[in-house]
Each structure stands twice: as structure tokens, then as C-alpha cells.
Amino acid sequence: MPVVDTRICKGSLTDSNATLYTSPSGTKTLVKSLILCNSSAAAVTVTLKLAGTDILAGQSIAANDYLSFSVLDQLIDATELIEGLASVTGVIRYYISGKQIS
Image 1: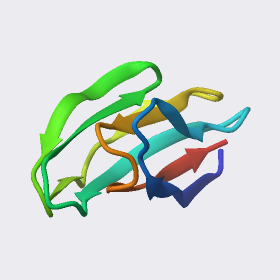
Image 2: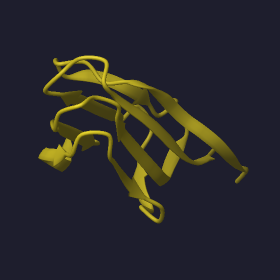
Image 3: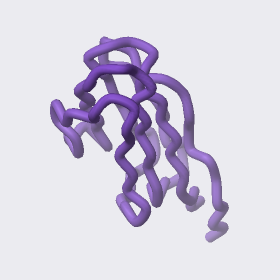
Image 4: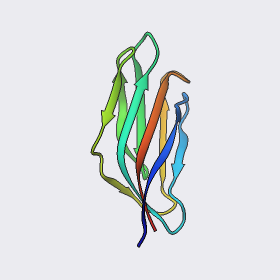
């Protein structure tokens, strides 16, 4: 069973729920690390889901601050999603890394 370290996804959240990543068919994805950075001058709320389950629900990130989860260790199965949204479009940047297991 090959295991590949990978950057799962990166980008900016919008103000409507969006798919950030879909675990490929025949592959499980181990989410290892997650960073959310607020580049705005005001607090912004964030909701993030793994496999349809909220892991952050309306979590506030202070102005010019970040949230970091360096040992998340959550597994999502093939075709399951990472989804997210923020209260303001384009100011929350995310970087998610982990391992793909096929």
C-alpha cells in the first residue's frame, strides 16, 4: 500500500460553502496539518468540514492572526470531501497537507 506525502490543497475561502479537496477514488487521505490565516484587519469566522463533519463551526480568527493544527491526523475515505467557508471572501487563506494512501 503506497503512502505519499502531499500538499492536499491550498487557496482562499469564499463566503459560500465550497469543496476544497476530494479524496481520489481508490485512495484514503490522512490530513496531517492545517493552517488558516486571516489577512484582514477584522475578525473573520470560519467553518471547515472533513467528510461532512464540522471540525470548525463558526470559529473566529482574529484580525491578522492564524489557526494552526500541526497534528490533526484525521482520515477521509475515497471520494470524501474537505469543505469550507468564511464570513468574508478571499481573506482566509488555507494550506492543508497530509498523506495519500492507495
